[in-house]
Image 1 (cartoon, rainbow, N blue to C red):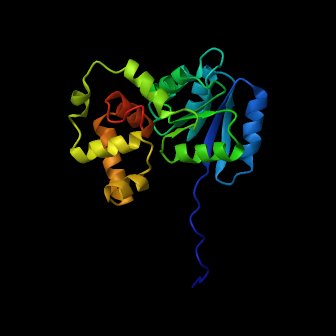
Image 2 (tube, rainbow, N blue to C red):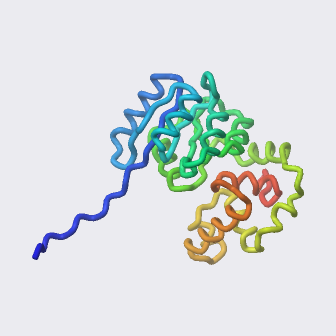
Image 3 (cartoon, rainbow, N blue to C red):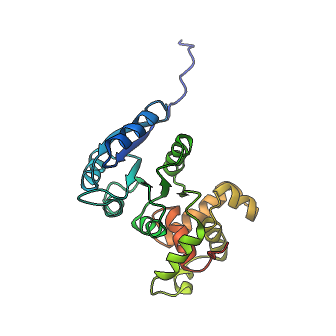
Length: 232
């Protein structure tokens, strides 16, 4: 009888695709990621069109996507990737040097799960990759809720807020509002006296009912429908 203890199961590393037209930027990101045990680079793209093809071939968990790229910009590439069959699990983390509010809303509307400025520190970038890969929404600290709220208000869908939220229970509306404020499942649970698992269930149900791809789109909906004020 073999008495050797079984090896603990290993978690597959987070697969990352780098999409940026600047070689030095890609090289810097790759050097940073390559020393991490739980993250690995599976491809590089120099423009948006190539990013779409690489995503189809490599099926990454996270795409670090620049906005300003030739042939196809990062917003258009994000839209194509998030709408492509078989790539539903792919999360897009938008990276840009442009601290411009318009891009935030465009990126989230396109299906991005996170938005980070290129001058973020190494630890902040690695944290962002892990957060987005885990299915959470992430925005750079300088990209404020006020900016999201202002653009959401300008581009609110034709449906009234009440029509859009009618499919939700009262508890799910509460949870949606807290997601819009940036709270995690654990924080939502603490706020509403629920377990994190129950909070996660409410979030998942709200996503399904509102046809939201992920938490980032729930944030947009929370502002569009007025559940969260830009001043919060």
